[in-house]
Amino acid sequence: MWKRACDTAAKHIAEAKECYKQRWDKSHMEPNFREGDQVLVSTLNLRKNAVEVQFTEEIYRKHPVFPVSLVKPYFQTEEEKLPCRKKNPTPPEIVEVEYSPGPVKKIIKARKIRLNGKDQRQYLVRFKNQTADKDKWLAEDAIIDGNFHLRRFRASWRTEKSHQW
Image 1 (cartoon, one colour):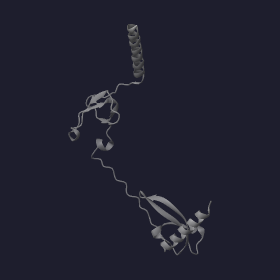
Image 2 (cartoon, one colour):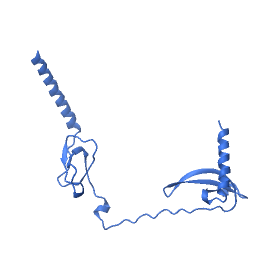
Image 3 (spheres, helix red, strand yellow):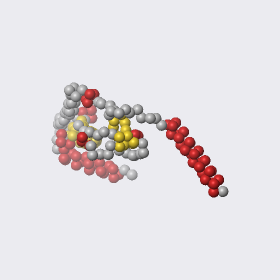
Image 4 (cartoon, one colour):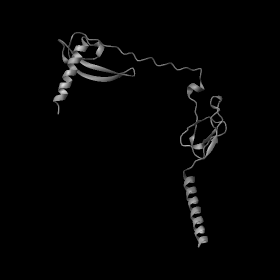
């Protein structure tokens, strides 16, 4: 009986090995790296299939063996291929600051926008003796008597919010 159990177990193990081999062969592709190719190495999920890498002097102390799945082909960028060719840096965006054309009647709305990579709060301002089509979005420091008008705007905004259910 012991012999028959061992034979059955060996048969099932052989079948499982064959099944795993077929599954692996169906989805596995051999890497197409050759000796001397430049590659990038990821350090996540280290596995059994390994490749030995020759490091540069800066990182020679690291272990040179990595799994094949972590190795990806390395392609040089245009700047690396042609180091003499320099890109012109993009000029910084110039933002014109608008100032109040006259005395402020009231602040109507607030918004937050991104200028030059920074968030900036702007306020929709209505001016005295002007129609609604002349309203402008201005920064806090561009509003004449800004502190006074902003206090009134924030107070009115809070009271409007408190009356809403």
